[in-house]
Image 1 (tube, one colour):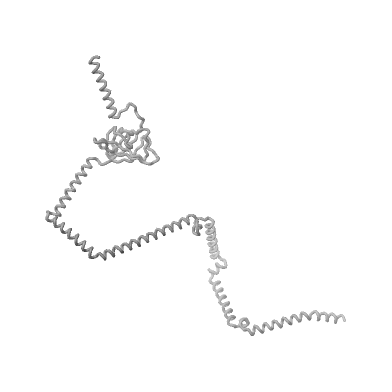
Image 2: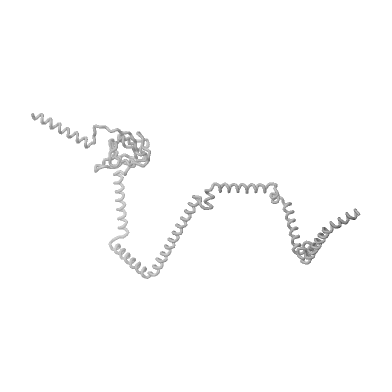
Length: 341
């Protein structure tokens, strides 16, 4: 084999290795997966570019196909999702950084909705992390604030002597506090005991409230299940109908009382009421006279001697009537004989 042939074979092998590595690194494939389009709107897409991957749980499921500017100056990202990936409508898309080089990707977080985004639909929920420039600006502001705080502390405490004096004052304050606690130990103990009693009272009240709440729940459950009088009144349709019928009857009675009936006239006609009142007064006067023994009937009811005489008189009259009844047939018979003879 000539040297030219060997060089040619070597070059071909190098080219094949280069193509394979390029396809591996660039994730190229000779087979094209079926996809469907979706859109997303972000406030900014700094660092994102066409062909940036879309990842779901760390797995690439699509790529960015286009980036454009919206009328409200927001960024519209068009992407192609693998056909076998269906995202719920409440899913979230956020821009994240991948790798040490800071490559931007779109991370998809699936939602829980039972409805899915249709092909050509829009993924409404998006998030944009703060950019590196923003973070650096905030770090710079934090450093400035720390510098100002340090300067303020130096101005407040002054030199080493002032700082030593502050420490001494703190030590004196600590000693005074310990002495104060020791001198008022009994009072502090009493306060703690009172607080403990108050806490126990609150616990007791809380338990009572819990018991009361449970009782109310039981009552509500009984009413809801139709137990007891109130429960039956709420749940029993027959009892409710009876109550309605009773109220209707009472309403009819009130209507009749307001009409020209006797009871209605008694309630509305003042003359009839006055006559009845006068009659009641007369009856009361008569009964008062009878109770006092005034008049014939009153004496008869109160005078025992007169009662006895009338009883004897009635008894005698009764005997006389019996005698007349016995003699009447004889007298009639004698009269008949006298006529015959």
